[in-house]
Amino acid sequence: MNKYIAYSPHASLSMMGLKLRQWHIWDIVEEHVRIAQKTVVYTPLEKLRFAMVNILAGGQGLVEINTRVRTDKMIVAAFGSARCAEQSTVSETINACTDETVEQMQEAIRVIYQKKSQGSQHDYGQQGLLLDVDMTGMPAGRQGEGVTKGYFSNQKSRRGRQLGRVTATQYDEIVVDQLFPGKRQLDKSLPGLVSAAEVVLALDDQRRPRTILRVDGGGGTDEDINWMLQHGYRILVKVRNWRRAAQLCQSVETWYPDPKIPEREVGFITQPHEYACPTRQIGIRTRKKDDTWSFHVLVLNLADDSLFPIARQPVRNQPTDRHVLLAAVYAYDLRSGGVETINRNAKQGLGLTRRNKKRWAAQMMLVLLAQLAYNLIVWFRLELAAYSSDFDNLKTLRMVRDVLAIPGRFETDGQGSTFVILNKGHPKAISFAKAFSQGLIHNDFVFTFGDI
Image (cartoon, rainbow, N blue to C red):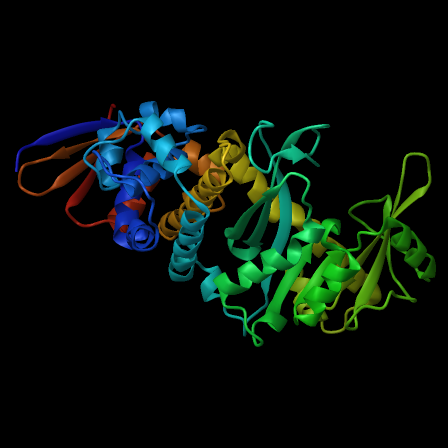
């Protein structure tokens, strides 16, 4: 074997690529996905993989394949190729995707999720599985399929599509991603999203009663609440109808102040709205600047021993009404640290809204590649964190920007050993090498440090 030296500004991402090959991630994709495009130099699935690697490398658009992936021999080799395709040919392959291709990719991601995720291995006997369901805007040019005017946060009269998402919030994993037209909102999409999650998570009659759906007011219609209750789920949902919320809050007999938010008070609804199954309903009133109140109502059918863990509070043997009310409100507030955080991480860390295609199937394929990349980063971080606390609680942006961007070089000695020399000045280099040398990679790899 000849001696070989290769430099990379993303040497750590190259090491991740080797780990993903040990997990046989792309082998599963190749078993399920077929793209009707001839092979000249690269297979269609190789080009699809280059698009995913570009996302992991921090590429905001496919055009960055040429500078982030194609010029980096270490990354290309680590992910299983001899060289990388030009970005325009990768784009052509994504444009060649069809609805059938998308379904095949969804099936591949389902298999990968069931094989690698914590959500699929959740112990329902220990505690309930918390799923957040939400919609987030995907701004796009007006010529794209499914692009319409719709609701996009802080962007009046914007056009785009909507992304429906189900997350396993306890594990920071994306269970389902589904694209919708720009006008579509959660009230028309929730049953379909939850049904898709049922397939991925194998939610049967025994698991659904131990699965908690946390949903904002977009999914708080009577039809959606009744659908979730009739399917046996535990729910924590905000009522969508603000007029009904104000009316229901009139029956609250005792208001309890919220010690965290002085202008907010909570109380039990004593004359609740009737749904398909019994529920508890909680009134929330918040004092506005003009000294009037705004009203909201939470609907839940959770037992107290399930509610307190979601609120990240200790279970109480004999909780008072005030304890239960505040736990419910705090549990709902934590959506901002759940699905909303995941949405923000996917947009900031993976450039989710920066890659747009006119064709619906092509755009959906980009969404699925980003979903796969997000979960792979989560699982890879867990592997690193098992050996070094430096990686605890790192979010997607910091993983892509810092952990997967450690410069270094590979050197082979001609006798089967490979030396990975990481930039000794990088703050994550030592802990990254420690994690790999203690169990994440084959013993033939030797980590050292130097000036890169």
